[in-house]
Amino acid sequence: MTTDATPGIDPAPNPHATEEQVQAALKDTKLAQVLYHDWEAETYDEKWSISFDERCIDYARGRFDAIETDEPLPYGRAMELGCGTGFFLLNLMQSGVAEKGSVTDLSPGMVKVALRNAENLGLDVDGRVADAEKIPYDDNTFDLVVGHAVLHHIPDVEQALREVLRVLKPGGRFLFAGEPSTIGDFYARWMSRATWAVTTNVTKFGPLQSWRRPQEELDESSRAAALEAVVDIHTFDPDELAGIARSAGAAKVSTATEELAAAMLGWPVRTFEAAVPPEKLGWGWARFAFGGWKRLTWLDENVLRKVVPQKFFYNVVVTGTKPE
Image (tube, rainbow, N blue to C red; front, side, top):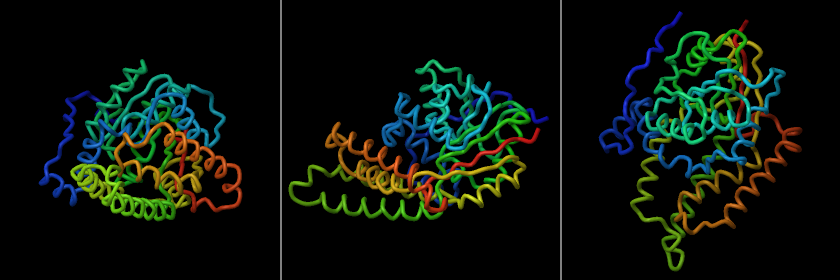
């Protein structure tokens, strides 16, 4: 029985990394994870259009329902691994997936924001700063473990999944969504780099200069992008990710994929939003971006998923259970 769940004093957030820390982080992926996500924590929801209303509740629940199970809801206690600001677990709890939650992240800044979001929503949630390869909760604690876009940040994914299975109760389920596929990551990064280059160069000239962010903000985004390249460690072939889960000891493993046409729109849109002053983008832009994403998601789910192999979609979802 592991008993490392005694509450301690978690480290404080460090939202303003020094140049020396950034340079050190380029050679230390876990330090990079902490610095990058502490840096992003207070603005992360705005950057990724994260909210805790019907729009994101439906999105989170859709990711959860991508792999159908016949298990009754709600789960009693759920944990989010690599919680960020709590997007996935808090919205799943609001949709009725779990009654009580725990948020964990390597970044103190992210845990702080996630707990604040949970308090504002009136949800029963605790939190710990935690390394996914050594989760600070006892064996057989949780009925459900979830994560969104987290496995690709973890150096030893199989070890993290072993830890997930350890803290799950027998028969408990894990579900990780939003993991980049190898092919999807290639075209997403290519489109993002092209969009950034075009936008930041075109807005140097003439009347378009009013659409250019201050140079210091662009430089800060570039530094963050340098760390992002360090913290994004893996991409996954769906079958290979399922194999890692089985090697970790999981049962009933299955995968699904999502976002092909939607990713082709989503990545350029998000990059453009990061490159121009936010006041330039009003309600009309938001309606175009979200409406376009929804229409292309419908195309992905109802047409392309039936004819295009899984590995070409951007996001991978994997689930499995702890053997009884």
